[in-house]
Length: 252
Ligand code: NAP
View 1: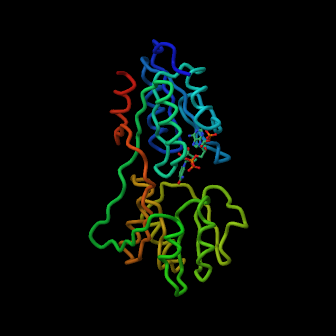
View 2: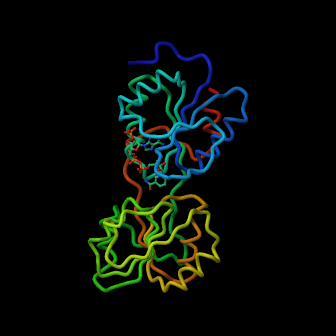
View 3: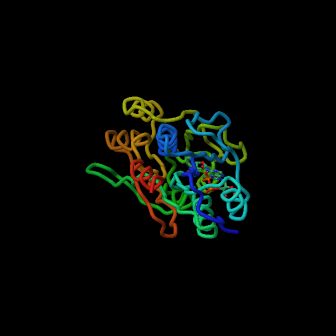
């Protein structure tokens, strides 16, 4: 299955679930040369509104995405998913290659440790649980609800998990308070939260970007350890950190 001929109009599929995807959607909607659809996985029950027509739910693997690209007459694909959403990104690479649709990855640069940061770098949630050590600690989990079950491997710690959607009770470690919040978070609020809760260690994914950075600054200010989970490895693909570059790609 391939695009039979390049669609004449510019019709983008934006794979979403990130703030960059929302910004790009707004810019596409405002550009009379461009047309597009944004795709969300459907993980959050009240997703933020987007300025482009929105489709929700999985495509049905690589084959399903290939079918969608052809049927919806998509000319270009921008993978603006979260840097830890590895499966959809791999599927996009395979589907675009199969149908001959140009693909660009729009992502944020990862964070790097600065002066005063006390990072312990790990490769996975399970490694993060191990890196917390044997002695019980008060741990703030900023990893979303999907990976929390891995921290059942380290039940001696006292956790606070911050999420947008409720986690499954069976995924939680034995001592785990759940708090709800959607960024951006202000630095002074993050400092107050960590202080009030007696947090000793923060566990986070290296998502990058400004919206979620305040907890890293709060850790620096308070001298807390940060267990930093590295991004999953991915096959090489054309990548940009710039919404302007993504728009230029669509207009090319
Ligand atoms: P994932 O493991 O890479 O993808 C699992 C499956 O979910 C995919 O195979 C696909 O189903 C479906 N899917 C994922 N993103 C989709 C999208 N934008 N549109 C349509 N279907 C999508 O993804 P994930 O880590 O669960 O993340 C799900 C969504 O949440 C993504 O859109 C991501 O940007 C966002 N998000 C993820 C994280 C994170 O830490 N992982 C954090 C913040 C936001 P089919 O195979 O059926 O197509």
